Length: 377
Image (cartoon, rainbow, N blue to C red; front, top):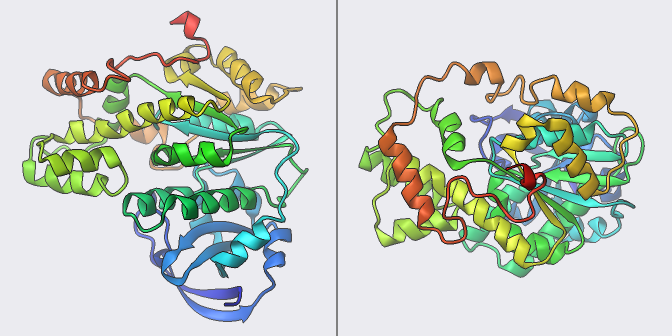
C-alpha cells in the first residue's frame, strides 16, 4: 500500500466533541506522496486511525500554529483541514521510529476533565521550550478499540509509541526540548500501556471533588431530561460501556443506575487510573483543581518543577491565567454560566454512595497521594 493524498469532498463531522474517525470526511484518492514528506512538513499532523483500511490519517492544515495552540487539538484539526493523507500502519511505524524524542522530558497530562487541565496545557504552551498539544484524539480511539477487543495490547502499545513519536515531529518555531500531550480523560483506560511504553515519561494528573465536578457537568444537562428515566439510562450506560470498562461491568451485572451515577463512573475510572500509574512506578504527580484555582502560581510552580520545565519569564503564563483557556468552545466560561440545572440532595447522596463503594477512593473529596500542595488541604 502507498502513502496517498486524499481530496476532501465533504465534511461529515456532526459533533465537535465526538470521537475522531475516518468518517469525519468524505474524500477521494489522490496522488502518492513520500511518507518522509509528512515528517518534515509541519502542515501535516496525525489525525486518526483508520482500522478498516489498516491505515492512519493525517490532516494537512495551512496554519499549523493555530491547530497546535487550540484548546482542543482534534477539533482544530477538523476545522482547519484542507487535505488528508492516508498512510499504511506498517509505514506509520517504520517512519515513526526515525522521529527522535525530545531532548528533555516527554510529558503526559491526564485528568478527570473539568479540572483545569486545559489551562495547564496552555501554560505549558506558553513556555518556549515546550511543545504542548491539548487532546490529540487518536489515543482516545485506541480506548474504544481496546474495550471492544478489536486490537490486542501488543498492537495497541505499538500504536501508542508510534503516535507519540509522530507528535514529536517538526513543528513551526523553535525545536522544543519538551513535548507535552494532554489527553482526553478516557485515555486513562490505557494507563497501564502508556506506562509500559514510556516508563520514564513524566505523568501529571489533575482532578477535583466529585460533587463539584458533577455539578459543573449537570448544569448544562437538558432541563427536560429525567435523571431516573431507566430507558434513557440503559441506553446511556451502553454507550459509555464502549469507552469505560467500569460502565461495562455495571451493564453486565444488570445493576440499574441513574444518569448521575453513570456519569460519575468516568470520574471514578480516572481516579482509579491514577493508582494504575502509581503501581507502575512512573514519575507521577497530581494537582487538585481546588489548589490550582486558589493559588495558581504556586500550583504551576510545583507543576513546572516536577516536569523539569524551567521558566525564565512568567509574563506569558500570567497572560494565560488571565484568559478563559476554553474560550470559543462549547466549554466557554460564559456559555457554562447559562446552565440552570442543580444537583438535588438525593443525587448527591447517590454520588457519595457509589464513590464510597470503591475502596481505592472511598470519598468524593479524596486527596490522592503525590498531590502537589497537598499540605495546604
